[in-house]
Image: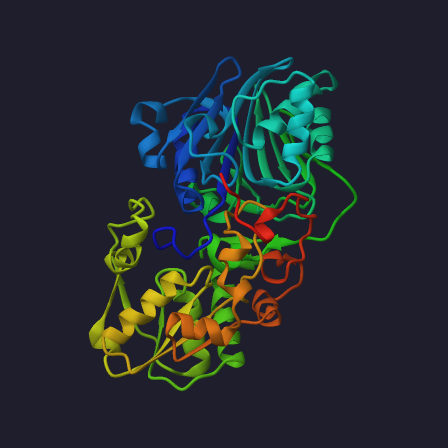
Length: 467
């Protein structure tokens, strides 16, 4: 990401462990969350059950900042963790997850990746019934739905709550004696299951399983409820089987390249996207470069298909991570140069193909093209390894209003002029599906067709909310 200017913001990441005996479980969750840090950098949290005690610790900050060495010695047999980027609710400590509460059956904590499109309606109904909310996030709606149905038992309460909510969710629920995982009926948000010595692991991405030495077993199915307790592991299905529609942006940008989601290698899909991009939009050039790190693998794929040499075009300041202080609007363009600097010896006098994963507003790409030309590039041809982003997302990605999406307001020729490129092209939806090598994806941000109906008050489509 470049200072929040021209990329979709991440979602969140969840990680859970269930062991057959009490161990220093906090350390395992810590490493799992560390592997998922790319999914959210605003806050981190953990809930641990020892059977007799229930410990919750969370705060604003990165995983390495929130948890102390002393806390990592905490023992338990089950735990869940969360890294957050806020898509609903603000950046406040009380909105950090997991959310915790005491209810009729004991202790309960929930960690959620995704977004509920009917949360406001359910929240209003619950408030009218006397429920008091402590946070502004949609996850608390689920917590209250489960608590209100507790007399039916936790498994039935979870099942009933999932019947009421709509949207995207990969959710982990921890009680005194159970770890429960739920994935939305369309599988929009990823969730996988692994086996570790003496127990099981659940995570948003398989790279987190690798980080703790767990063996990947399978992806949690769309609409599946996985229940792990001392009796073992079993599952329930929410409803009749629905079509898998994983968020395509998981493969394009969000997920780590070493993850495998729903049977597809993220790394290989990005290579194929670059190859398809060349097949659809070839160009004569001297060097192919990628925008670090989001365009790197697609650039390698483009180079492989075109036989144009791949090279390093920008040097990234590795000490400026995603925690880089957001600059004032008038400083944003300069901030791009602070994070990325052109490698002049590689691009001077050359025709350059610049590859990135997406364009949202166009501001960063305009600056990057300008940097290359000022560094002596003879031509700059921009190629984007995804279709034109023309619609907002309602399922756990923080996207701008449609009026701010350059692809919703300008055609490709106009965008090319806007960013100062000699040419511009995007991967088609068909090309993206070829790269992903199967059907079954949420493509709403490209074509406006969503697996779940967007909320009626979806003012993102036309106007920016005035507050």
